[in-house]
Amino acid sequence: MILVFIGPHGSGKGTIAQLFSRKGWVSFSMGQALREHVQRMGKYSQEVDRFLRAGKLVRNKVAYAVLHEHLSSLKKKNIIFDGFPRNVKQFRGARSILRLLKRDIDAFIFIDVPDSEVIARLKERKQCPRCQRIYGKNVSPRKKGFCNADGEKLVLRTDDNPAVIRDRFRVFYEETFPVMDEASKYYPVFRVNGVGSPTVVFKRVSRVVSLLN
Ligand SMILES: [Zn+2]
Image 1 (cartoon, rainbow, N blue to C red):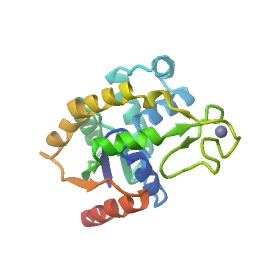
Image 2: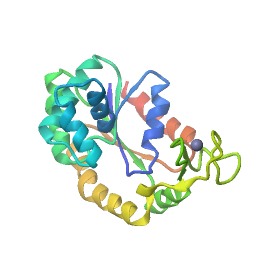
Image 3: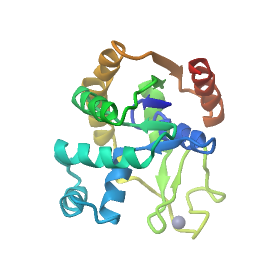
Image 4: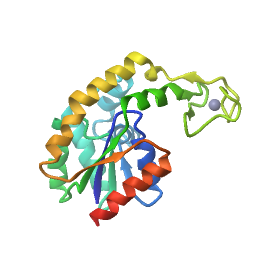
């Protein structure tokens, strides 16, 4: 089975995907696949490494090659696409690659969290500058404002500042949201209420997945 989790940055979809991975699912994120490609010194590793370091998007051709390679290595495993595809073009690309691999998406799951809640969550999110651990609503430091592991003073993540958050919302609504319209022509699209603890949201998503079997 292949599921696509869609939701804005801060919706918690990555955390829910992690909870599914404890049940044997494989969580796929394009960023992770690209980083593994570099580590394995794959065909495009030099180019990918350069683009990742510059924080830029790799060419579509390269992204699809890495996607194909990564998905074929997963064989018939159950996969969750976490934050991919990000736009309609990537959705079409992913579909043609899955067709080559004789696999297909089973459903889209939209983890719906109001913008105000996402902003509140991101404001609470702090990071340790030394060991990079992330603290938030669900993982709190034992001593407020300091890292559990090394006692370093926690800071706001640089990519969680208001201007960056606003820009990510804009990209999400302009580019990612339309993927669901396009996807609904081919696949069931479910909306799950993403407000609540990860365990509660995980249960809601699991209920939807159990309907698919
Ligand atoms: Zn630390």
